[in-house]
Image 1 (cartoon, rainbow, N blue to C red):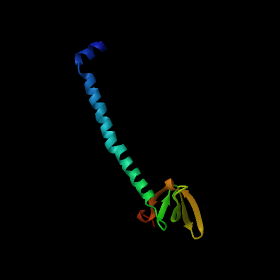
Image 2 (cartoon, rainbow, N blue to C red):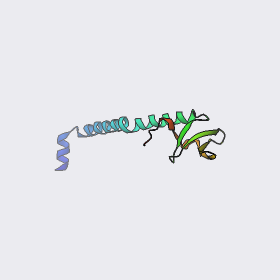
Image 3 (cartoon, rainbow, N blue to C red):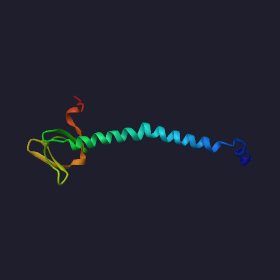
Image 4 (spheres, one colour):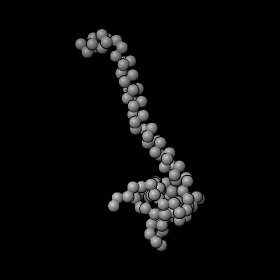
Length: 103
């Protein structure tokens, strides 16, 4: 009976293929593309870091860039007066001056 129902439909496989392509296209537009765009922005920010920039690390620590070591791909960030930590350049995600602060 199931085979007879499939034979009667005829073009059922083509409709399913079109639906799968449509679902993938929607996923790409609303999920994958914005994520790639955000990653590109972060990469451009990391490549444009300069000494004195206010940043936020991946762990949520706010600080000021004191030194950038291109060979080791690290950034020295001052998180308090006299306290400098070394962070991998890939873990510096945002400009602290553009982050909203809560009072």
